[in-house]
Amino acid sequence: MKRKSFVACVFVYSFFIIPLLPAPGDEERPVHPNLNQELAVYNKVYIAGTATDRTPRQEDGYERDKKISASGEMKLTDQFSVTASYGYLDHYSTTRKIWSGWDRWAVGAKYFVKTDFASFGGGVQFFGPSVSQPREADINPDLFLIRAYFGGLKRFGAFSIQATANFESETNSSGKETAEENFKRFLYTGLTLSYSLPSKTNLLLEFNHRTTVSNTITPYSDYFVIAPGIQYATNPNGYLTFSLMLQTRTDSNIDRGFKIGYLYFFGD
Image (cartoon, rainbow, N blue to C red; front, side):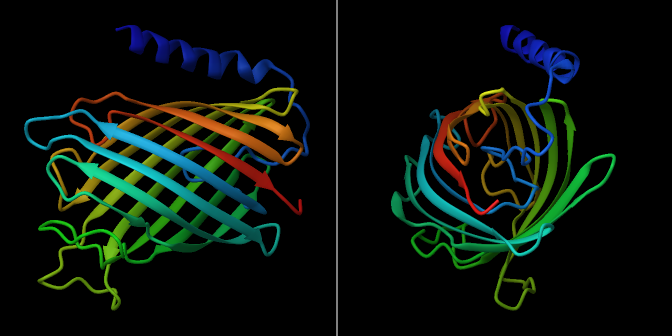
């Protein structure tokens, strides 16, 4: 009950109070989410560490993930950019194989357009195989991943709101599903509320939901995370970032976690 009251108060404050506050400047770049898919195009480097875990359950045990990742983005025009990322993952589980190693590499492209009403963006990401992950009965790490996304961004003074939808599917090198390969598919939706302080520090409240489209991996494949966060400005182009992940469901793939990193913009 207390958590529901807290969330309700945050929504009321975000939608009715923050939009009345003055904006720090009309030429500010769009706020970059800590957790959700970003829509705007940037020249940036983002280095982050993420840790999540799930408490033991009779059906599917205890799991913990620790990940270090680095991502980069380069604008080719004011509306188009290319992206790349890589990371290292350490996975512990009481019911699955324990492993650690290089995570999937990823490359992608983004398109972003501004209108008088709002801004809109979309793109695609292509993830390579998970070369370090062991093969299990319901997991094929040799498959590629394709993720397509689209969303909108609207600013009200110092307050901004970003909403995104991502569709992710496994695939093989031919892009065709076979009788031996049942591709798993997920739909991600995200909402990022942000408020920019005069000091250039950004306060964030993010909501991230994942649901299985087909071929559930485990009984806890889905989740709904609330993530309050902050981007503390260390200089005009650099931010220390932190987000706390709080789970709202008991039948979830994540119970708690956090993400901490450093975000640097260049060439703008």
